Image (tube, rainbow, N blue to C red; front, top):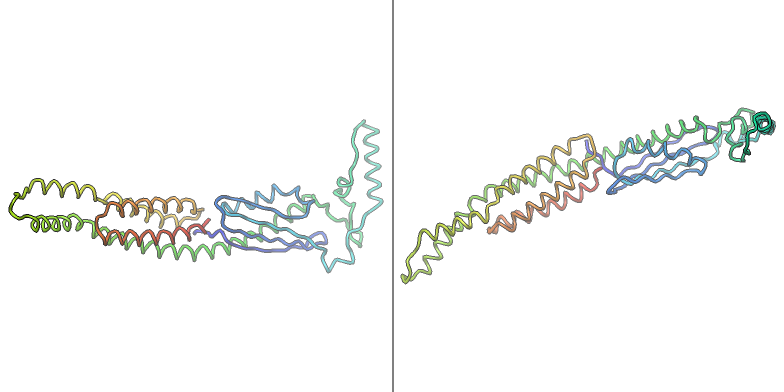
Length: 298
């Protein structure tokens, strides 16, 4: 299944007296770009959260926003500083320095991250903001929002895939028409050239069948498009195969579309036949539509 690069997912969790909201949005991008926005004290978890996104999303720009607000049901029992616990930590730090000759000072950030320093109004200790429990909570919430995002990307991807398959069928139809027309190009040119020579021949010069045959052979070699049609068919089949794979295919499709454009241009330039040229122009127009759609696939 092919995935679109466009999607949106949201989730929320209650933890530590807070309601934490997770919002993940993704849009088209040539490469992979992940932007994280969250409270400053949670930047400690940025690498873990970024890797979690990368596990699921390989291409596109992904904006992750994590917000927290006091749980309305827990407002009365909001965070309270446990002064006795703070004093005991500071006393323990002084004893460590005195007993073992250690250097250093406890900063405000260090103290606030210690277990038991903050508690709710009921005297229950709150988890420090960079504890393992907080990390597990953030990863869980992000996982839920990514799952929602992937569901939307999958639905959008199925619509894009269906549209691309219809357009590939149109390309195959045009290819088959060119395949049928190709052999008639030389015969039509031969008949027209013979007729023109007969009209111009007033009896003053002899008709040289050998030179006439050489001219037809040179023309046939110059306008031969068998190789281009074979490669074109191969590229169409490769596109169909890619659309059925469970991996990012956008970059591969982009390459194949470029190759099909190149083959179509060659066919148009080599074909000395109005109908073939028109079919090549139709194919180029269809390829441009395919390119625009494929640009939305991961």
